Length: 334
Image (tube, rainbow, N blue to C red; front, top):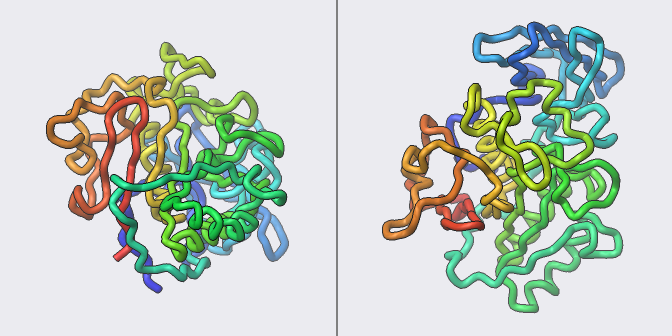
């Protein structure tokens, strides 16, 4: 089954992207002159790949022998290592190596799902870890029929960005692109979304874009510019969404929103505590698909760069509700 058009285009290729020519690595680390990747190949053996710096602060390179399942670290000039800030999976925890994930390996069954209009949804919010005794993505599938029988038309998953330790409500995530490993692997989460769609349930994901958790945050090792020197939140330092070099930081978050919708086919995102996201860039600079509806007040925050373009008409897939809670949504995959 062919993949649907991407939610957002163009998308910066960051992290480890598996393709027919191997694995392409790319990371934003503007304060470092040189970086390299230390790779543990799935089939055995190790490799070291020197990355090429670019004028915009990224470091990039290709491992032609790389493939899905390889483990890797980014390595600094002093020999220290850190996981990928856009890692797609952290099988050994948020301090361990990152894993190369090929999302195209999953075979979607519900390819023509189209969610109903949001206006009349009954949303059942659940925490994957406490929803079943096993506390996994796959175990949750067995309970979806019960949720549907209650009259719910959508499920909302509490935040899944990986965190330190084995149990968390989800609001201490530090690996924004990596589904929490304690609930299963990325394809297990895809299976959950696929199964929900087969039962007529839309799937919403909670995302936290206002702070990182207290343990496992490796972003400052790549650059202190990820965070704003003056903006703070009740939970820690705020992100640099409107200061010097804020463009790649904004792209980091917008890319994350598109990632959940493209790679996992979530129908919408619920943004947590948007009042704590400090963004001084005027709301009217948002591209048209994310503009608020006529007659509504401006959204309180946005992480959308003004130069992004889109492939679909606004009404087809994107809407934002102004106020302390913002939803980003998509209609389906025609």
